[in-house]
Image (cartoon, rainbow, N blue to C red; front, top):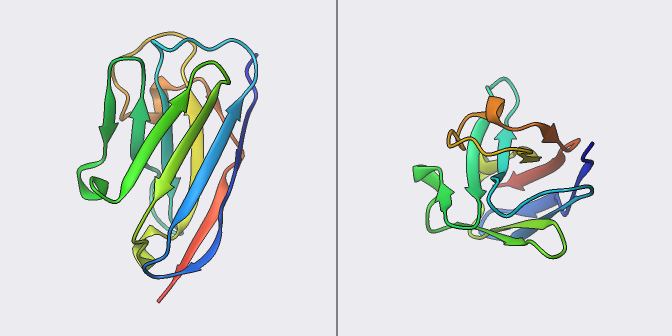
Length: 123
């Protein structure tokens, strides 16, 4: 069993930065993807970014503003979000695989999820 806990959300103004953190307990491997997803009110959950030992991938619309990083020794995942926009407002979820699947963009390929952290960007 893996427990995943996010932190770092909050209320910021447009143009500001936030850093989300995620801690995963239990056994994870660098070859497996860990990722961030988000869900805005009234919308479906969407892929944000994912990382494993050889790949770092982003949703096309977020490239250049968001940066994902991972500390395999500490089983932690981070998401640095810069130049935030009101449309980035959402609950952000951290997720981890427990075996490798290459469909990193599909939430169904992740086995454990955090409870989510709210990010609100005011205009």
